[in-house]
Image (cartoon, rainbow, N blue to C red; front, side):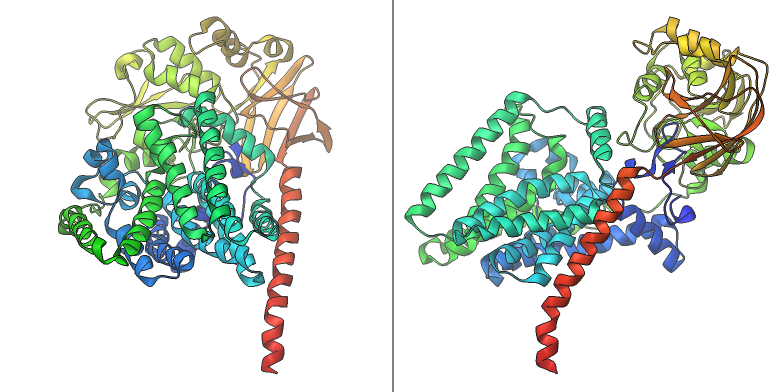
Length: 613
């Protein structure tokens, strides 16, 4: 979708009944995939594989550079890189992950291939480079390395928020470790400068509202943090800082072992604490197992090299290396197993169903589920009431509605929700479908209640939702719609049906809606006194409406859609989604950051140029 609509759309009309384009996901992997697809003339799927595969390989080199930068030991760096490619300490520490990862495949590869963690593992792959550059930049003033550190940190955040979470855990520990060694206040200033460059480069998309919406939607996709767990984590951090500060006052130490101990302790507290102590500190702790692997691998590589320098410990090192071969052998023997051959997509319901809808109901908003939902926009620009993930939703009624439609056993309530969301067709995959997840608990509930318009006789049925007019625009009685109230829950039949009645049983005046771009809508409608125009697209204050060149007021209705105060008469009402002010301000901040970075790089290159002359 992005490849076909470059350079950038401010609005995304295909997911969640509409949302801001930036809210969907951090931009780096999306744009990288789209640009590779255009540059090499390949499918976006293959471009995605290229992008994530190259970064995966480079990420192992990043671990090497991080270990060598911190220790100045090639032995440590080689051990860390080899362990990263072949081993996963998490599989020893948490049995449930060992059962999930057959043949002892390393977690960073396993989650990439099995669970589609391309953005997360791409961010993790850059993390090693970012921490290595930050380590060098904080110890000594090197403008080029300073800028590179900020750019790499920004790249981590721009790929994935779990990678950003790992950066948020590791970066303060690194600052503390370097300061303990150097004991100069300038370390904190350099760290602040790196953070400023990183945020400045992300400012055009990482806006305050983006952070707010992401935090709001986090409870749909992750376990909430427990205040008691957060308090325990803060206490542990304070104890670590006091202990390391006291230890380094008596004896000077290098930053590297302090960083390794701190990183291992923090990731262990987050991940292992969740599984063994029930701690809930941040997000979904299980997603951070590759970061736990990284921290423990670096620590073990450091410990083994240190032990090797003591002759009496060398046999122990040899034993440990031999023991490490136990999981490596089955993994290498089945190293191709994670890379399964692709299906013929034309034989899959994810392709067949979306193709049929694109050809037979073009422009209609549908409600897919399961793996059909996840692949719904892989081939066609078809709108759906849900989306690929739950991170970018503006309308918080959608999860409640979708749960009621897929899990509830009352067909009339489900149909009411479909009508309220402006859905023209609902895709139901039964237990015999090749669709992967089978979200519907009662897939038969629509039989006889909705007309069947597609049936592949393999478990996939499309039902037509009985809406008065096909468009997502309605002429409504203004007072009646304003009187409608937000449902108190998915089964609030009274408020739901009152809203549906106001939308579907209003004036007999059809409105013709046409998208002229992802950010622009034209609606032709005849409005009588006391009436208004409802557009069942998610309300956002950046939407602007005009008729005959005059601005029209837009308000949010009880279900999160746009109610436009249109004047009486026949009009063509134009709606345009303006780039929000915070994004425009962010572009200015990003531009200033790029200028500052360019000046620093030019000043760093000037002495060499002068010497050459």
